[in-house]
Length: 164
View 1 (cartoon, one colour):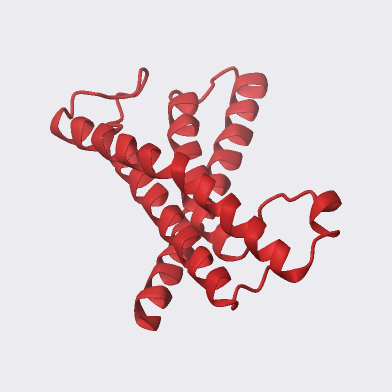
View 2: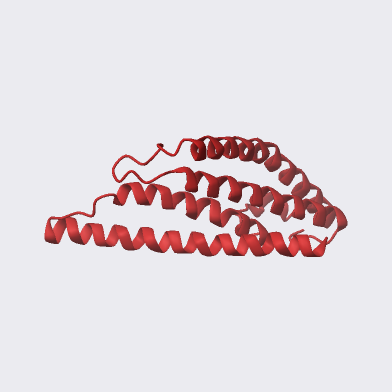
């Protein structure tokens, strides 16, 4: 079981590197596009298409890692008044609610990815970049997010969750 958890964590870390690279590429493209548009009067064609697709890499690449590191935004007003067991129960319930939303979303994304993979004519508007790889990445990232949440739930039930 530990190897599976380490494997999921390893995938989360790898996806976070893809997210970081996507964010850097978006910043660089935007910077170069602004320079090209306002100083040379030649914007980079397809910047918006690429930034839209790279946003998928940033969001779905980072979610599993953020969950693994327990770096989600939290409001401590209520939590600080709870006992340790109260915190654990609250975190278990919150994670279960998250799964109720995220599992159907993951299924939907997987179906959309499969559809786009079978219809490679689906491309971005300007540069005709196929969108299927980005949908596949989003579906994979969403599944990894669900697995990270399940790991957290199990850890909270066992009493080994570091966040409680």
